[in-house]
Length: 493
Image 1 (cartoon, one colour):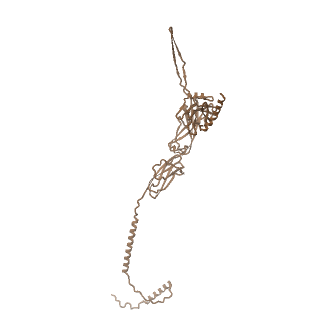
Image 2 (spheres, rainbow, N blue to C red):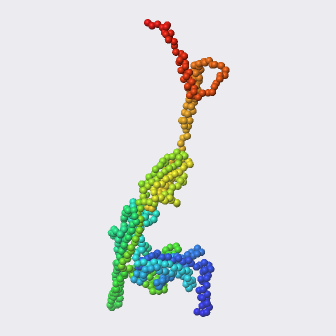
Image 3 (tube, rainbow, N blue to C red):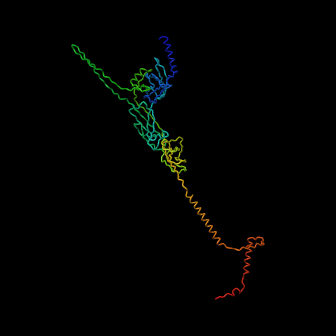
């Protein structure tokens, strides 16, 4: 190689990244994983390539993966934007913990690999199986939190594993030991336990999981091939038969695979091709892990709170109102506190299924009072949302406002007529009394002696009484008859 070629290579090597950055060709690399993964199970790392300018990256590219444990793997060079790398970490060589995986994407320009971007991700390796317990009921979607269960429904306790690589499908035996409030409720072969929580209190659910992995059954196939060769001459005939030894083919699983996905279609290479590919492009020793044989365990715990649902909803009040009256409705119910409710007046409504509370009112007593004045008559449907921590209900409250016929009241007719009759009778009675009094009028002679009398000082009441008595006594004495004169002219038979 002459000196010009050497300088050209150096110039190209140092100028290509600058040119790529200037024209926006540097890629954005995203690296994710589907962990956490249990030791001995597969874990997949996915690389996604994109361009900040929005242009679809054009390859071909290849990726080099390397972790902090000292391993590195190189993918096949393909015109793809998604690369998948699957591997496993045996429990005999690795311990649980958080680890880092790095990737660098290269693109071959002429004969030189140029880095296009890199990324890193953290992944978690565990000794026990990963998952959790879920409490499922018929109306679980109505619960405020997944940690609440209703005492009015049967609960299904389900173990949900995080197993994206189907590691548990290789287990020959899977046993679940169930405990509720430290009471053993037996074992199951399926990850489901049906249970009824009847007491309103906090409950603790635990499950021990034991997964057994045995050696897979190996199937051998023997093929025998016979080759016959015949040689003929003018004098003798010789026949030679050669038999090849039997060959045995044994199927084995390869835990480490490499696959890529193109923008248009997805393609995945076969395990045998991946093995040869990884060996041909490895940067460090390629390790072939045998299928796991042994057992895996897990202990999952779930804290639940059992509550009584809303029940016995009663509505009190008159829903037929005359226009102008105020609606006064009362709603009562039973269940576990606290209760939440809201209601809104939106005019004429026919659908209440999508009613919800944005600002619910919280109360510890299920007693709801609704007061509203309707400005116009008609039929209204008011959605009343009532719920607690385990039950949600929408009550379509129908209210009818009718317009009353405005007729003249009877009092407006009777009172004037009765008053007129009373007035007429009073006038007639007055006229009759006047004539009756005039007919019986007595004529008296008045003393028109206008001479002034000497009126002394007015006497008091006792003085006048004394004078009257003396005057009366004097008159009695003056009227006494003479003796033997009163009966001279009287005769008797």
